[in-house]
Length: 566
Image (cartoon, rainbow, N blue to C red; front, side, top):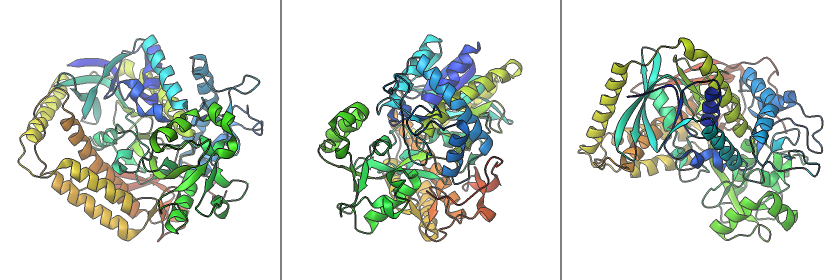
């Protein structure tokens, strides 16, 4: 058994931030990632990271309080306002630390960090490095982690969160290279495992690594999951691949155009806002245009950047041009880009407080797999990168304060958990079923896109719930997996599909129960927000028969809920 004081699972921005902060404080930290950390999905974020620096023309009056208001309003007032204020107050410091660590932010003519407008923001506060912001931040933090001698276990796949008697004792890993199961005990464990987009895999901007298994591992171990019905669709996924076309395209002045040549957003929000409406509103507008026959090929609309000119596109959106030319042979300097709404972000996740703590002693979570909740029912663009770094750093500090008096992991408990995983591998490799796990996964994604997508209603979602239950029953009869141990991706993927099924069930069950529309959760049969009955968080707890739902209050205090208009 390997033992460390603090184990972080996930090599993206949240995990790296937590590991670095703890290491700076003298903690023995190990970071476990199923891919090399610089391949983490944080690197796919393009458009920028929010902070009230007040650098941009038109943003001189910006402040962390105004950033908090925009975030809370964008969340449709489901965000916990104390956590939001912590995040927005910390934002300028995060940007300066990243700059001093070497992150190459784009600059104003005066040499200040450049900022661009993003949807739902009252001011241009999104700091950026061309359209590769996540990539730049990820490289910067990985370099810092190496500098501080963080221990890395790359291509190690966590298959079990070990919790006994209300206390987390570590994780069981599958070393892909050797094929060995390895228990890693720790006095404190943090999950920073990313999003769950691959539940919707045929139409998502998420990488293949973003399966939501981290959330499901915590769920299976008895950790509550919060607000998992809130799933964000990004307005502009490249058609047909769904590769992200950053909100920065619209922040720089791009237009959304239907097949009549109209900038149709004026029909959904004020002409002052247009393409810079929040993501949930913009996605519904695009999907409405497509559904009502004003899309191209009944499948997409156009994102038009041609009027920006070659110089601006090459300076600020070079990655978007590369992606468009590589994947659809479209040069946005000369032609509009085909886009459609694509699943992008999970607002819900492992239930934590503003300190990244869960109800399980010694277990923490940060980043997209966690729900603090700073995004509520709808995340504003530019807040996800901020969330990862702010709460990763907070978690690293909180864990460091917890560890001096924390109990050590029990070797027997870890060995028992190891034996359970070895038995599970054997049972999967010796099964006698005839169901194809990958076909089940394809069916699951189709059901979720069709029944629990941008527009929802009771009939569709109840059908989805039943379909997921049927798929889970069929999953118990899958074909045996490959028996080789080294680089056994069959075992990895089947384990992730099991997580997909339970993650999808939490989305669908939570959504059918919430009889209102709020943020990204839009019901055609309950089209209005209902604060009297539904201004509350959904909590899912694992049972063998499916999630047990309960609710808890949203933390207000800064801003009273109001009608959300743009």
